[in-house]
Length: 376
Image (cartoon, rainbow, N blue to C red):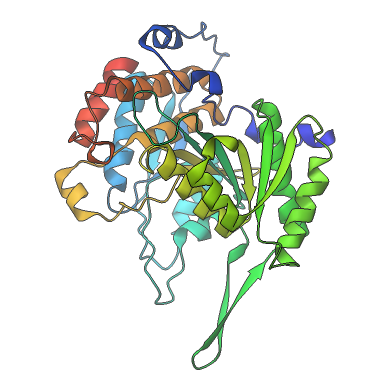
């Protein structure tokens, strides 16, 4: 079981447990009372975090996080940098800040369609070797959805596959795109998924693939998952073809626990699971490697460039607030993370302040004020 100690970066990254999936006002009272937090000497020193507000709604939702952090007196401060999706590359001073601070909080960055402009999101993941993307999709008490008891963690390989960016025009009208799958990357994402399941008392890991068609590339991914699974006999291991996976997600999502996927499939699966559980504006996520981590909205920020939402200042900040709770746990400030997470869940449960995507008409600032009222 040497692999079980290989990934200390996972421990406490995110902790919405199954026992908390249905919170009543009664047990919310107890959830809001945490065990006395005893900091180590010097732990109150402020930790620097690189902040990239991003495009569209990004400045709105990152400002929401800044306000809540200040209200909680969280021991972090932000180094803010302007980065936009139409830039050719991430500015060097931004990369140096992340390399120094080890942690970054990021709003959405728009990626232009076509035109040869590469995604800055992909550039960040590759340059920092943020090989694991983690998105937690779960039901919120008080928010009705078609399916109940959804609590899915999608762990996605983040550095290769169809996102390798190896494309070229063979001849006019014919383009070739290479999908790269390696044993090394497949094995380490499988180990991350099983390690996460083990540390968070999860019971099952499902590998998503298309090895029936892509026999060599997805076959190698599947082979790596099977090998790692033998090291964790207490965790059930399943496999599902990606198209059947999508059908199963929309018909019976509660059957899934932890899902491990290659790059492209993970993007599709995470967004589908987010939509089932309540919407992309709610689901937290992060990208992590051995040295660095970037926290951002878990599922695609499809509304990042929605000008109407920006003008009306009605963006939903919940996903990034919960991602910042993940960040606080990553920085080993669990008490602050619990306060923030419980405050957000309580606001959603009460239902008095919801943004348009959740069936309300609340502004970003009003929702932030409601959260602050419970963390102070």
